[in-house]
Image 1 (cartoon, helix red, strand yellow):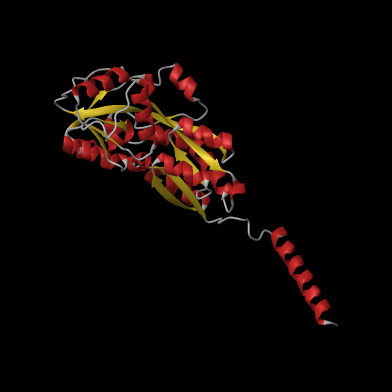
Image 2 (cartoon, rainbow, N blue to C red):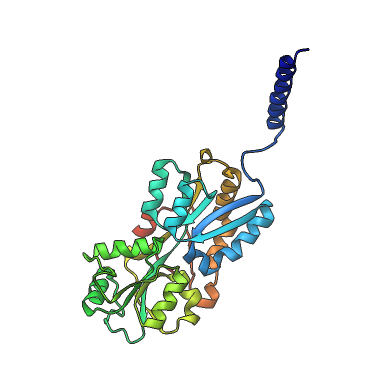
Length: 295
């Protein structure tokens, strides 16, 4: 048999072997044993994932690798196929990924609210206000120090949208009273505490860190504009080696009745109110329509 024919036979056998391996459940196209979760620093700082993820790992037999970054970075990871599943809180930016086909689903998991916290002496006099636009105008007018995350996170996106709503656009270049920390929620609260500054925070992270930032107190809350929605999104498997099976299982896990109950009870007894309110089966519109009670 000629060398050419031998080579052809070998290639045929290799092709058949590859097909048989695939048919018999070989390489599924992704790492079956690991799920990459890109999520927000604020959610991670709250400690909720430390409670939930080990349960999922035990049940699913999958190791979850948590990448804690700002929501903007988490969404970019999803768009670039560098994560399997996303858990973030920036509805407008999330919808852009849905529209672009970067994710195959977006489901509301839970919500809480944002709150403006500030120094106990409240130099801008905003304590008790429930109109966030008026409060921000008053802070700017008083040139009271305001610490922004400045990191393209979900909280930073929300803060900038609130300034826009108030008709203002403070910047580090133009306003000495406006600071950009460039870090996560925990670091920003620490800076605000040290500098006697105001800042926007999600309530869950503030409550979980309140013992470490005793110089800050909630001052502005209750405006529907301050509702904070967390959604889970499964990254499109067409982007490469995406663990679509694991991401679907994680979504199902978060929406399960017993896990939703755990989310609602997380640290409720310690703080006298829930850090997160379960939202499976709801929409942002339905929650906002009833005022989005935060506990």
